[in-house]
Length: 490
Ligand SMILES: [Zn+2]
Image 1 (cartoon, protein in one colour):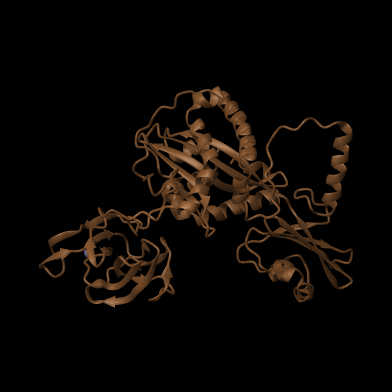
Image 2: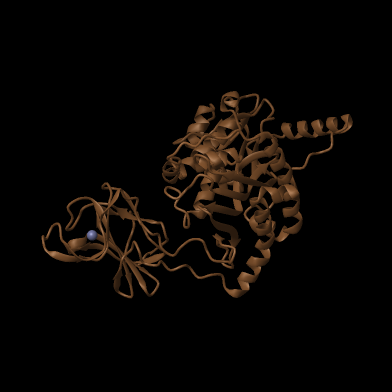
């Protein structure tokens, strides 16, 4: 982020943006706090590269790329922004200087919009802007603004716009306009990213005015080389931390960023940001990326399949995500491995250990290793509190010694990969808090640490053809940018 919070602290828009960012960070906190420490052990001296020149080169190729993306792949662009109906992909090209007349006309138009309260940051003085704080209700806000509960009730009763204004979240922006006698004359709020609603109260009658605010996606290309950490490289390449996180998540099934990152690893990303009325609103999506890790090249291409599910695929159309997580818990150490015979710590007898024990503090979350149906949830002698998941016909996984189950988890229920199912504990026959994890194929126990995890099905032939057609131009661009000499030769 290039914003300077100190300079804008007073602006409600900035505080809203910060609130949104905080919310996003909170949402990803677990992952974020883990990987913000991803750094390389050695301290490599940073060579004084002429970033100024490189920035110019990047900027100009970014503009060129944007044009190509816009021209070559309108289908792709359409597929990528189905969530925002009125959005338009525009190009960040330099505009010719305006003549004095045009500027004045433009200013007048802007002033008209501002008067209507449609231009953020240019509200006319009558609007009082309020940002919703955590735990606040609409009644609280009305009270704070010196408005009576009757005035709130009138808006509720009118039920215009299906009462959308009542669904409030911390960080939302409301604006109030009062009449000369101090009563509510108008209430303004954003129903979603791109819809602004103004409720006018005139002689007790409520009328709504809805304005679509154009959203656009601006495409960027970023290329980075790891010198000290992934986040430092992302930052240097002009990416926000949350976009870098998206990059890490896209490749997270193939690259272990905590252990396998190397100095000199590099990435190339094509992504977009969402802009509203010329103002950057939020991060968009990664469209395609390559990551070179220890000399191995990985590709992630975003594609929406026939079911409407968006995920990342390798260039040959294989999903990047695996059917199973290798480890369903964040463990501190492996306290017992899979073996044919070991001395049981509680029973004091030789016993086969048919799973892996992951030591972790009591209460550590345990996640479903794959999409599954809950086959069993309850107490089974030595296992204590145990969950057994059935994944399709062949595979099942077992999670033992839980301190408690995830709220609402019940037998027969479907769970998604990565969904919380319970917490580490030491119920049953256990000497300390750990997860006992088993992986079974056709009823046979397999070592979860070494078993070959099945890959999800590749795209069916018809979809594969569509995938290739859509991703080909993106792939060509990525390849070009991976080699800076080629990029310059264009
Ligand atoms: Zn065990």
